Image (tube, rainbow, N blue to C red):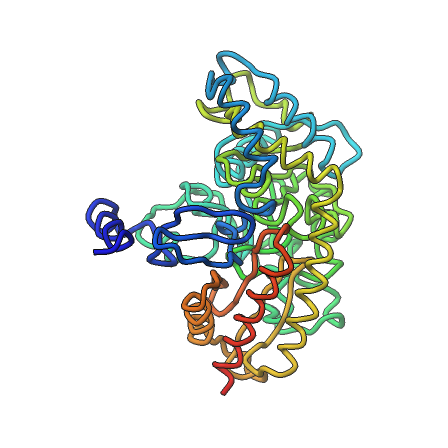
Length: 433
């Protein structure tokens, strides 16, 4: 029995089926954009631990920061004995986040915890209960964030009852417009729909917050038209509703800017981030206007592990790379390369209905027919399987499971990128025959 088979047997025996596994492989090491399994096989990583490894696996700066902090101490609990890295990280994030106003930041352990804390803060500050989220959105798996997450299976099925006072409206999905309109003649009515939403679903006076992903993650990298977020923000401002940008997956340079909302010139009241901003260490952040963040009473926010010092140092190392400018420049160049390649495939491959995204946060939606736009989940599965067999890690997503997304490290080498893209291209050719 091979080492992988031994580990797989242990997994099947002692780990429940609930935690999903995209592959049957076990990692032994990882560096840059390459993962090596326990049998010595190499895989080019276009998944990045689901958008967590923007700076690449085992980046020297990150490893050095983690080791240095581990030599000092690994945990004291910020609520008991404070430490410098927590406050320094808060300072850096507040300076990097868009918005010409005073900001504060707090830390938790995951993207879901960040989103949940943002909602808690908004409710406390506004004294309102309602939360508006969106179809195709994903915000986590805790009770509240699972409720805000759109897709039922596998995320919500059988786990009810769900949290109250959560209301979901259509997202600005131009390729599959929920209103049957066509951009730009539609005048972006999907955003103006928020005004009608106050009449038929929840009153504006009862709404604490609107939470939205700039580019949907699990929902399929849907990117709304330019006017969408400015309109939503204006309506929120008019009604005293807190505008929360969920940048858990789109932040930390994934779209070529520190935060994706910068592409639209949006200054959110609060931003949540996690995943890549600490290169895989379990930490998340809520950054927001000081008057909002400071509203809850002392002791109302926090958690034992929130802002762990080792994770804080890892995040500081990542932000240093972003501040130096190298990471964002690499992301911008990578996005140009990917878009050119994907657009060329779309011209030749009828199964690719749309190429979309921002910067290197790109996806390809697969359809059986470009006229009917019938989702083609089978082709998406075939592409992922083909790539896996040839040493490329790739994931499908979207409400119908028909979208191929790319989340390779922004630091990926030219060789790793070209080898990975060659495998992808071969995969699309194989399903187009």
